Length: 544
Image (cartoon, rainbow, N blue to C red; front, side, top):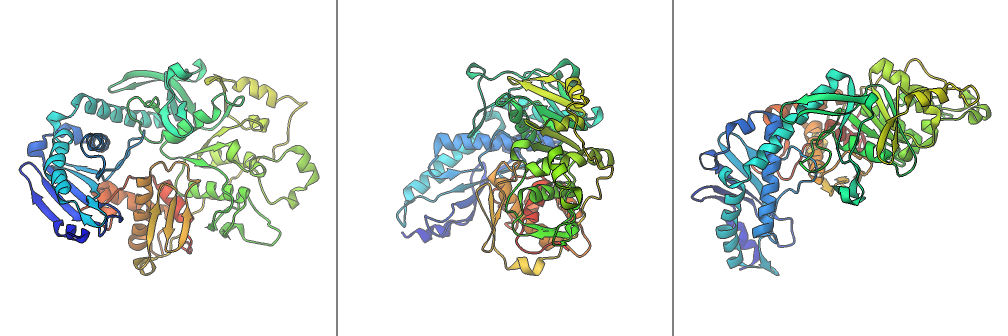
């Protein structure tokens, strides 16, 4: 028969141990795959209730079962079946739903065909042989590696406690001794093996803290205190590797990743310059003022920002969304935004320079707003004057060189003139416009990890570096539509709208924000900072 005859399969089918739901069948073999669900009652799946009695445990179970289902697809039927692919991080996904009544897995199937003709016997084999085998191996507790699942749940609970301990100890990050931070390659996020040169992390004694975890027990490692911390060192000695670990460890990591006990504040945001990005009504006045053309920098707009302007906007937008820790690498920053040396200050008078460099504001940002900063610095020693802690990476081993850096900073022969500003300024608090009528007819799509499209406009997220999974990008598209249609009104600020959306997810689940009821598609929960980044790059006017 012709391929469209597969449409007759849509519906629910009661098998002996589970229900198969064929929610959507692709119209032709070249369209996106068909969407299916497999629902197994807990009376048969029999997962213990204690595994899902906390949200962090449930996220661990969802991740474990998704990986397990993917593994068994690869064993039985890799050509036609697909499910969300997990990386090194453990994310809250919609690929699996589990509660006390059922386990439900959401997956995709490319209906088999030869050209535009169906392959009925192959489809029959998938439905009646491969899928039951995959179900038995993936979704029944007695058949899975329960010890591995238990270790992942323990890891999730330890991670939650470790992250809570950061606040109690006044830290913004922690790196456990023995962690493996280097990655296998620039294109792989897997750990570099020790036999290929990876060095286990070892904290300097002056920064070492000890924390007791419920399952791992007592662990020790380097605690980075709140305030202003510099990571310095020669090239290829591990500065950016350490910052990359802090950037990624806003999420828990799987066993064997090497960063299982590395955590940052979950409100840490990586900041960089971003030439050419859009900026809408953002207050960048703490950093940029007195522009020659008289433009109001308290509500700054441009379709093509410069490096310094984009970095100022990225900081202010992160602070508006609630960031409490900024992660900055000198290599990806605009030089004139980060610092201006004494010779340039002599040549160009302050009234002719609209940019207040970050070095003049970083201290007041912490004192006035309790927002910490961790900076990778390779060539700007001026930051020694404002740093609370200076960590040198020496062949991937950290050393606390704060005292030496302060002596250099106090040397009168090489001292500089930092024009520190005592007041940082107010944080932005823009109000969202209601977009419900406009967005009802719009087309919002995603293309891989870094791109969203709004009708024909492209939204580039390639510089939002803590976006790690294309399913997060899918979720951002859903969240943006949900916020602008259902939450935004003439009175809600961006921060308030984000809080409302995430409160709904917390209470009702991630499925709730998808317009595709029953089968919400591939989604993994991003943080509100990445959602805010997409809204801040939106092509239409959405802020008053």
